[in-house]
Length: 158
Image (cartoon, rainbow, N blue to C red; front, side, top):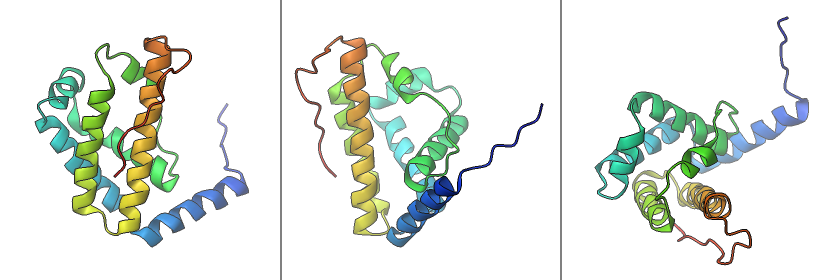
């Protein structure tokens, strides 16, 4: 049976609102593609993060496409990303806070270089920080078994 899934009018309106807010800050698909390409080029060249990604990413064009869909879903509400970032990160036994701090430093550096507006820089940077903190908290609870989250995860701001 072939079923067509139609988005609820509220979901359509929410997506349009998110896209309008993003557009007002200069955030669009072209900006996201440039951010993803430049950021992951920096990651591949990084002494700390490059080897971690190099061991796990066999097809960089496919990975960049997936990351592009991820960020378009986060920033534009595109809804085109499917995947489980938490499981991918949990599978890396040595991944810890210093790696996320380095990831954010590279992300913020790229963002500072190409953000079309200060509002875009702040908005995208806040989203990146929130994602990194969420992943790090998940690692703490699920991999490291820190059920109480004895130390609140807090990473640097853009």
